[in-house]
Image 1 (cartoon, rainbow, N blue to C red):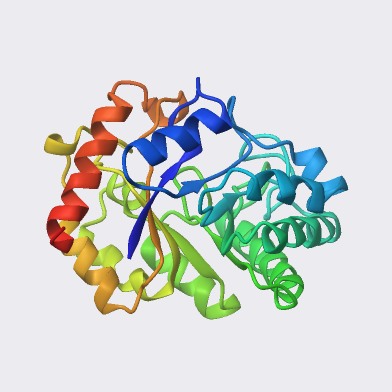
Image 2 (image 1 turned 90 degrees about the horizontal axis):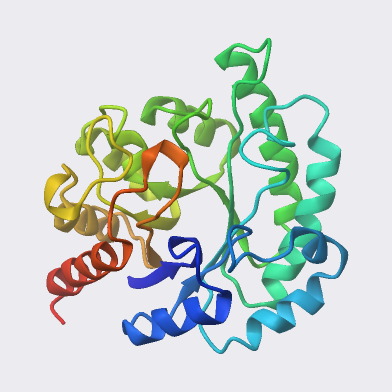
Length: 270
């Protein structure tokens, strides 16, 4: 396992500055997405994926993962919204073409929300249909498609996520913090480790999606061992953030990033 840094951790920095921070911290890998000053242009990816891939290759840094959203925020064109499957499948073809050309190993998307008038079960059913269609597109590409179960989605418990995996075969961008903040114990989340395609690291505790490293409840050495023992060999993305979502505005991102980096390196033994 190796570390990467999420570009959206530093909202005031452009993409080249995020690359420089990653290199300065000895991480030398950067996850990219659509948000803040470092964000890629979704319309450009969809219209000319090879041109955007060329720009990513020119960064001269490993890019393990790209975070794609089909529409604006967590609601727009989300996977559990009826009538979106055809457009989303068309979009993911361009997205995965971009990822393959940019040597990006995986792409993560969100599972969808409970839309107006839906129940959780209805949202889950439409999302599963969407995911099956997207996985069919992904079967023709090198980059692996995965979802990140998250707070405010319809997939907020380990048991619900496992049912979705059983239905569809989708892999995970696994972030323990989204479950921990809802009160799930770490050992209740651990069985999902064997489905990880990509991993996000951030300290958390019940009621708080993000917490200072010394004040959260996640046991990271135990998590690293769980992932290793489950056969995970990918990147662990350092994802301390500074954003309005779930009140994640109060931590010093650079300090938290370094503390998590050091925790992993100490556990790994270098």
